[in-house]
Length: 148
Image (tube, rainbow, N blue to C red; front, side, top):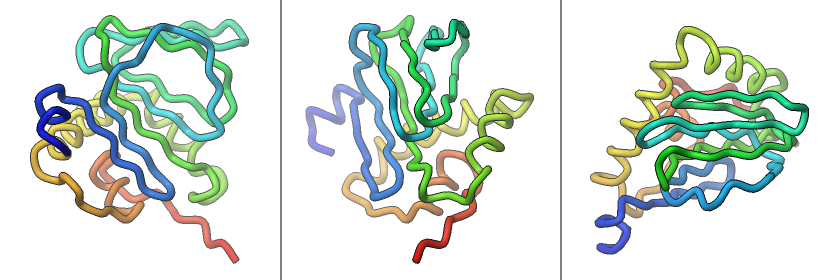
């Protein structure tokens, strides 16, 4: 991370199967990602509205792939973890979504915020495997899909 990025607190870590983003959310607009998305507030809360009318407010929201949604934040910036669905075993993301929405959700939120601080301070330019990324952000490696 360059000096400007370090001062701003913004960062982006991109691997072939995962992305960790900390930065500006931008103005609320409808979006639809083909990946699994976890949004975590840096401060305050997040406001999620899905195309089917579901509304959620909290410090963390997770979305399965291909769900049209609008996300807004009480703060200008957000943390975002993105997981490519073809990189994990079938059913793994649905299981993770249930766990994120359940009693473990607060622990996941804290872990993702801690990963952000760790990445800002100690991992500039470091390369990560998906398992290392998952362990840092989620506390465990997601089961990897074996591709031909």
